[in-house]
Length: 315
Image 1 (cartoon, rainbow, N blue to C red):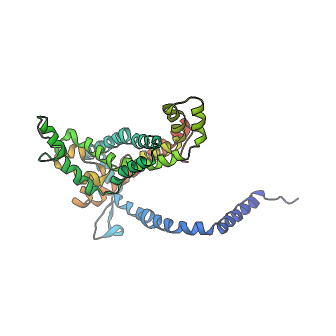
Image 2 (cartoon, rainbow, N blue to C red; image 1 turned 30 degrees about the vertical axis):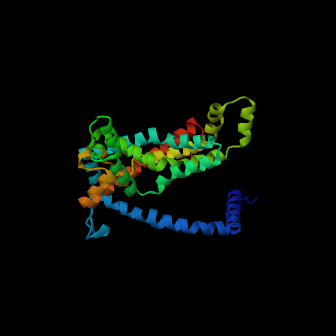
Image 3 (cartoon, helix red, strand yellow; image 1 turned 90 degrees about the vertical axis):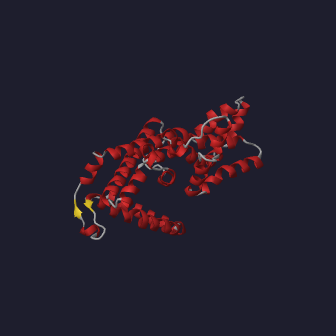
């Protein structure tokens, strides 16, 4: 008897069902095209430039004409004391962001959800969203003026109480705190939008049932709101870990100065100074690739741990 190949038949059926789905939803797939083109041109094609990290790149000879040096730049990177100072600063600032700023949008979203007066709620939302639309140039200018030792608002208050003016942006003890505060002021309100959207997706019947059972506002938040947005929190936390070594380069670049390099210089500013300042393109590319690999590994680990411990993950 002739054997029937079920595997081949199943493959044909799957291929037909895929094409049927595409034909039915062709308009949706057409909408995807601009996004895919953007990803290919600006995200995937530039990956070819990563080869610079393994070359003694010469801008006049180009990638094809530059000498191949293998892992030399990575060895220099690992033996560089300056890089480990930069790596430490980046890691510390990211940890501060996670500890102080990651929970802040969650708190804002929960508080806004508890406000019943619609006019007041919309007004507060608008006010806390606005800083997001200001560029870091504007935000840096605001904080530099507010914290200025000569005539700044904060130092005027300090002087009013008999204290001496403080050069916050030139003080190593204050600089990291200012970076975290300014980052939170600019981004916390906007980041809360995702959590507000997640909260609106929770069924109102759950809150009504909790009220009937005698649960107060706090218990409703603990037993309904937080579990209801737990998957969103986990997803954003995993994604945040992937950017743990990508502290806002533009923010630091606009606010720091040579006196606070020891505590404020991060990987992004280091790459900028090495790549554009010293024109060491190969070494700066090696630093960037190292940064990306660490981020990728952290995302994979965080996703696996989340799937195992809390049964929630991105994939």
